[in-house]
Length: 280
Image (cartoon, rainbow, N blue to C red; front, side):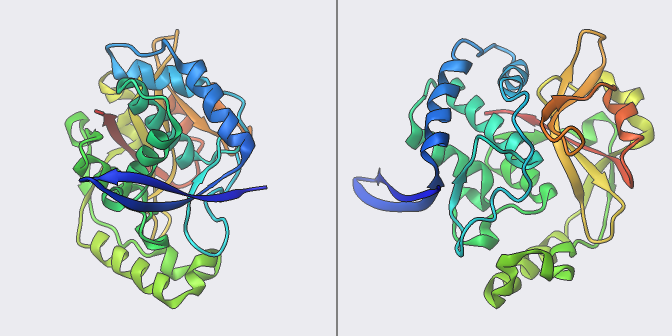
């Protein structure tokens, strides 16, 4: 059973009410266990820290739509079931906490909110960073990462982004006209932006420029959509970059058996990748 509660925090000497949080007692315990498990994993190379934290989630079940809970948007804390995006978000959040020497639940939820929502503030369903290209751009604006796709040979593309509004029936929260209109406004904003993608046929050639711990987003040719999947780059013992991710194949967090460039050739309608380097 999920529980709802309000977090209070002090800002400029005043008490303010933050977002509602959805978290089960089991997930609260898992949070405490995770802070113990990652203690000592911090390295000077934050990318290696990201991979080390990510691998503590190995075997965690893949669960789709983990954030679609209840009738209103809340900050969902679910460490027992992860989709590809919440896996990346949680790893980055724990990494930031470790870097900052923090281990309390309030810091965790505040950091998770910062990562997950536009400009770091939960203000309803439409404030969530639904499209991953916007997730990257907005978290770069916050100073949490850098989009390095262009630096490693990516090319700028423009593409109409409208998948959510065009498939309104797939998103329960979009039954609300207010949410629908706000999502359309977000899509209109994205349609005025270009995104940078490293083409699939260039990934192996540029693989040496990808670092362990880089966040990888899989670009797609699907109409109206920018990214279909995400994960974390990890350079394995064979010297090749693999993908650490919440897999829809094995239905759990794993490292791909094939190097990233070969794995992507088997992903239907993949066109390449975006690469973002965490910089907490």
